[in-house]
Length: 173
Length: 173
Length: 173
Image (cartoon, rainbow over the protein chains, first blue to last red):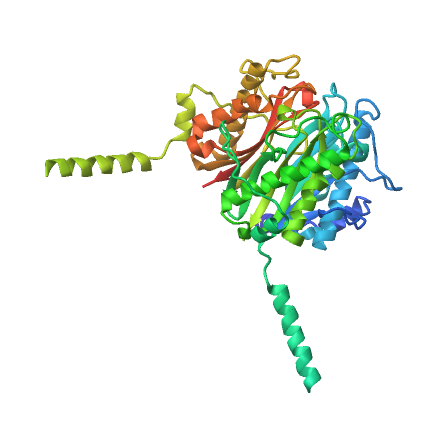
């Protein structure tokens, strides 16, 4: 009987732990990531548009924490690993815009679709390894809800020669 | 008392003016833009597909008013300014398809997402200045509802060597 | 009177034939196409994400029936016709993912939006003829419901040097 009660209690605990929602804003803090309010575009577009429960984000670039952007072509000016780091910075920029638009990342249900564009040489073949920098970050923050449909492709040129540009569609609760 | 009534009246006028909807079809005319019915694609795709209140438009190119398309690579065959003009022509082509699909532009709620692709050299860095040609047009026509999330990126090649290709997602009323 | 009844019967037959739904799973079989369960991505993304009645598919590449992928740049390593065949293989890969995600292709209402990316040389201009390989397949399977909004563009590089990468949005019933 005692054993039976123990099993019941453990099961309830497990269910409770599973149902406990992750606090995404806190998760970002725990990862030591600082989200900074994004700059307003100077041209006739915006960082994000909401339609129903979908949030469409503009293509974002890799801002350096110390200012400026990570530039250059992967396969020539940057290694794949440096490209990965750039894509992670893009991910942080995307999170910053989500936070600024929504007030809290906890309004997010899941990541839906990523278009990851790598500024690279014509013979570069590891675009997925570069864009993983962003995908890994999204899963660090949102867990399985961070997984997304994705294309990771090579571009011959990007604005201001940034190394990576990524746009994303997010589903809201 | 008279002053009070005057304030009330002015307020009502202001609210009325604000609520007055812009006629987008008329706005296009006022801008001196002629929308021509788009050609039907010869292959197995269509110019636009509606799902719920979203209209997905195919990638459009820059038709010349006198016929043919604006071709060449920006940064080599075209200046940034010529690229801007090409992107504006793409915007007119997109508006033409919207009008043909919907009957009236007044069925549109807002622009949602633009993917602006510039046929350019590997060292060209001003894709945003080119795609502004389309973004500016959309805001001239739709005002704040013309603002959109956007990516402006460089391509090594586009169909028939057109200078710019842009696809867009539109929200309907 | 006999004539009248004949006309009625023929009309009813015509309406019945029209209302009869095409079995998309069967149609794929009739076309001699074998759909194989797609591999699970090793990185932090997934092959498809469903939001409401939309299914967003990741960028897919052209798997060879005998294993491996079709690689190379169209306009240099592959002809336009070989590119077309590669795009058809991508279409089969996309159908395989749809089937794996949904259980049956009959849950599909229509194709919505294709982004067709061709790995090509800077002077290649026939991206639409390449992506037709996928578009034609979709219409062979889904009829008019296979028609989609589309962009067909050139990329300077794709993952593992695959010849074509295509992502698609699908509307479900």
